[in-house]
Length: 482
Ligand SMILES: *Cc1c(COP(=O)(O)O)cnc(C)c1O
Image (cartoon, rainbow, N blue to C red; front, side, top):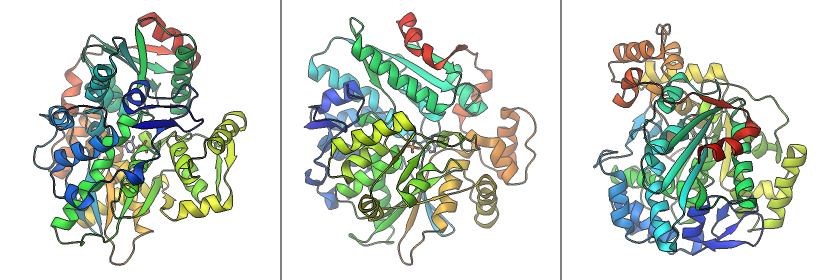
């Protein structure tokens, strides 16, 4: 199947798109065929999570062989066999818990599969080059990608995170990562600086290739990250069918705490593939550039970058919005290219009014200030006995503004509350003093819940990575390690 760049008519096979991650012209790979994949939605919804994954990924990435087996091997021992992504009701909303994987954030769902997709694509395309994965992270992608790629033969992985810009637990997760093929490095700057310089490194290596190496991405710019995320929208819908909350064909609304626009875009893909998705609600923290964009049609990065209690959403340049621009403009690469050039040169672009109308057919957007995030965590705990993390709280709070009578609202729950114990403790009125591990333990005692072992066990692990670089040094840093 063909994947095109969002910025030109350059196209490649699905396997090649997986291997490259990003197109040579800086665009993102996307297929125009989402609506004509002929997925039998009803039949797909009868399968279990792994069956659905094989079906959906098989349609999107037909060049990958033995998809069923690949999926089962990817998730074996990492997620609960029966219910990997449970759907839980609390108050008025349903919470789709996506964080029960090896690093306690939703990125595990896709990053458990991506290494096998890349390895398999390499076999299919007959490439013998070593795959070098370059990843910028706002906190959670890094660890999930490291866990996925550590010691995978024929690969190396580099993770760049904002220096002092991730939570202490997120940092501890990354700097204690073992594996002979892993490199973890802090960057003096914020996530946008990391993402921009990693994209620059891709361009540098495209212009000046390294013998025997091919570069790819574990960020949601890689289509192999988005594809597995489509599946849990189906799984949530199937659960609501089983519970008798909807009949087949009824709409279900989804509210998605959003940063790089990958998770919510996967929901739009699910809709285009035929799932009866109602409204998709884009929820931002106080870095509310996306909700401004949906309201005004102006994407304006000329604003202060704020550090919040939901650091995985502290992003001003949401990469995957580019794919949405492409789809909604009727696959107009010139339009996308103009927007991206304006963004690069002036920090802002504007879409026409009819384009914004087209967006409104599927999307709503809202945002949530820091005090509201804390209030929402406290409210859910007091009123419903439901404990959630800061990112999920953003979604939950914004969802309340868009609830429709008779339509189930699913909030994507993207991380374990124990990953952000400090903010969660403060929000529920607990004592948030001491180290992050004291806080984790106290949160457990206070709520009667148990921190996942992958988090509570971190403080006994040695720090293995201490490198810090400036953004413009990333390409040289990578070369020095290869
Ligand atoms: C990455 C992340 C998000 C944002 O997801 P995007 O796909 O970047 O929009 C939200 N919450 C958590 C916990 C995350 O790790």
